[in-house]
Length: 419
Image (cartoon, rainbow, N blue to C red):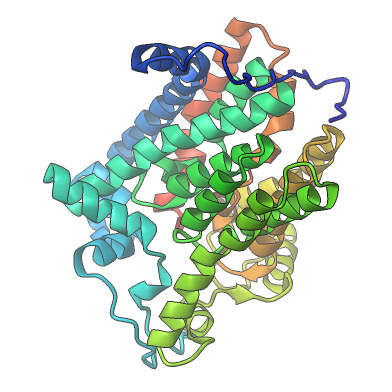
């Protein structure tokens, strides 16, 4: 793989031949894992803890959460805010399961009543399992699942980044993921951390040519959210390239190609069948959440309004939308720099389709920062630039950004907008 002058190229050793030294025992394996992933996980933990503390302090200082409905950014305690908005729906699924229905609505612009079947089953299923094992309520179990998943995600971001940009940049990339706009949901009752964990490791398995693991991981990710279609497409492209080049046989790449999309396709088919129409899931998203693919019309309308200081559009949240606007303006730069690094084609496909799905849909524009959390390859140019800093300068920079992210990635999402 070719690399830009700014990219640190790391050669991966060939797998050991038969008859080499036996596999290490559990202790040796654990020492290896800690030595390999420890710095990245420590950096991620540090910035997330700073950001989370800043977020909780802002909530406590404002006190406005005490006046809001627990479903919508309120509660008796600051940590109750972490279970509101979409978190409330995930808890409902964990506690009560699904009752798929398409019911007409007469309120506002909505044509259908909201139904929990819009939320994919993997994350609430894990909440239910953790709650049963630990005795925690659904809020506590959801936070546990998200926090643990965030560390698995950070390790996956590190693993992918190391193969492209080297160890130091990979450690920084894991930390950048922890302070990126939208990262406030990483330790909340949201499915984002779990999805990124699965997506990052699926990408790593593709890059190390472990096709069955890539296909199965993508399949599981498909049970978590519909935008896993972008991941399945990326894995599919990589598998087709491998088949064309005939470098890994036929069975492995073909298995990944077939298995990857079955998760999200299967759930959407089941939900639609239960609601009586093969388009019912998308009808629900459109009628109950006003969320549908419109080829970027809504995004263009929002950007035009914001450029001229207007808010003549649905789902308008001025502070949240302005942060999203700055993020959208930064995307061409990040994409250009990522392409210059010449990553594997499938990573560009995965990232590109995710961007198209996010910016091409009518949705809450301020949530763009959260919807782009799976685009972790875009963090690589940032990490490569930051790796030139000294250790002290890097720690100060990331620490300062982490404090600020408690506001822009936490408080703004949950209290000044809708995450």
